[in-house]
Every structure is written in structure tokens, then in C-alpha cells.
Image (tube, rainbow, N blue to C red; front, top):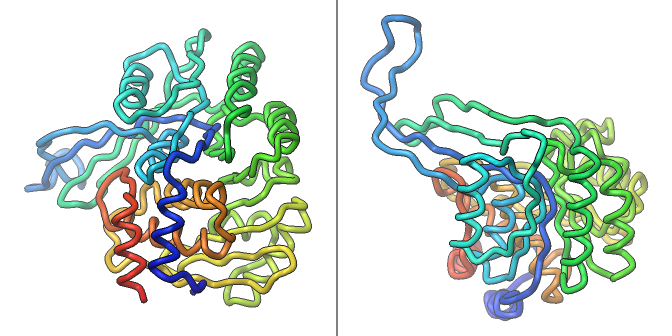
Length: 330
């Protein structure tokens, strides 16, 4: 575990307040249908869920921005929504959360991405996805690029949240990443395999274990494998560091010119892993903007993820919760 005292952590959390993070990526609406199961359907061997309520939350890149706000930062969100009820819900949620909207509304009939999860007795029964995952039309992409260009002038970190739903295109990355580098804005990417080689020159990538294995061809069975895979990513992308997230096994930070740092998971109980990666990259971005070292940022991010997986549904962590998790883990 990286050495990070509660006093130093509290000081960093204080410095994270108000730091400006621009989040670019695939914006989604997370819909939760809540209920309980009392019987099996006579029509098929599936549970019958009696619905007791529903809720809507910012998902995907929207959840990254929500985590930035929850941790005390200032967030701007760039992405694409449809001209539909789901898109209007997202705009309202951004206003309620105090997140600056830099969203483009699709004029081609492209719908807002919606993930619907049916939850019974705190367990996910089924998930449905409504989406169009093809690349953005050129006109929409140009408008999104202009929005990003405007926001980068005041951003202290850029997060690219790539869920492979079409907003993060190869041509957009080729324009946005050089813009951020010229302004010396740290770039953090939650990657997908299809675009992996396009993230060259970023500050940090945060692949999970499966994405790391796919990108490097290294099967991760121990710390030596993690180090080898991490250094392969650094060479492949010419980036400063890779943070491999490994669920209940914690995370591993491989930084250029330094020994790998392996951080054990902070969660005491895991109820729902939805959005854990979003909390990790949001915390990393804010901490780096506040002057934290990468190991210090990873320690805070690990605690934030531990808080989030202890909640059901799309959730965020607060500074007090992160600090409490850090103290509990010492």
C-alpha cells in the first residue's frame, strides 16, 4: 500500500476542491427498476419481479463527472445525447449536480444510450441496453470537438471515458489529445481494446484485468505478470503510467522509471461493482490536478472504489467517505 497518512490524505482532499476536470466520452442514462421476487414465472423458468420503484442516474462518462463533483471538484461533461426523454433526464441531472454541460444533441435520430438494470433483493436480475454504438456523424463530431476545445482552456485534467458507444472516435482522439498535450493538461483514459493504440502519449490509462490481458497478450496470474504487462503498455502507448484495476484483488500502478506499486482492495463488503472504474479515474484526475504523486492518487482512488462498491446502484464517494475508508484500512 502506498504510504499515505490520514493527515496527508486530508490535505490532498482539501486541495482537490474546485479543481477543474473535463470529462469526454460516452454519456449514458442508468435506469434502475427496484423490486422483489416472490415466485417463478409459469411461462418460463425466470423470476417474476414485483416492481416497487425506479430511479435514474448519470452513467458512463456522466458518472465520472458525477464522481468529480461528489469529491469536491468542478466538472464539465462533453459527449452526445439523443433528442429524447433519456437525453432530457441527463440534462436535468447535470443541472441538479452542478456539472457544466458541453453535450451535443444528435440531429440524426441517434438515441441516448440507456442501461436498464432490474434489481431485486439487492441483486441484479437482468440488464437491458438501448444504444447505437456506431461512430458519430462528422457534423456531430466537429461540434463536439469545438466544445472540447473551449473547455480545455480552463481544464486542469482531461478524462477520456471510452465505453465504445461511438462518442470517442479515432479522428476525435487524434485532434483532442494533441490539444491537451499542448496545454500541458494531464490526460487520463479509461480505455477500450478497439482504440487502445490511439491513446499514445497520454498521462495514465486505467485498464481492468481483462483489457490489460487483451492489449498485451500477457495472462495476469501474479505480480511479475502485472509488471510485465504494465511495462508493455507503457512501451506501446509511450504513456507515463498504467493503473491496472483488478476488482477484489485491488489495483497495480506501473509507472515509468519506478517499481510497480500493488494496492490491496479497500472494500469490506461488495454489493455492486457498477461504476467502480468511474470513481477510480475521477479520483485519479482530481488528485493529480491537486499535485498528488501517482501512488498517492492511487491510494485515494482505491479507497473511493471501495466506498462505491459498498453501495447498490450507480454511486459516488464523498471526501469524508474516502478518508474514513483510508483510516479503516490502516
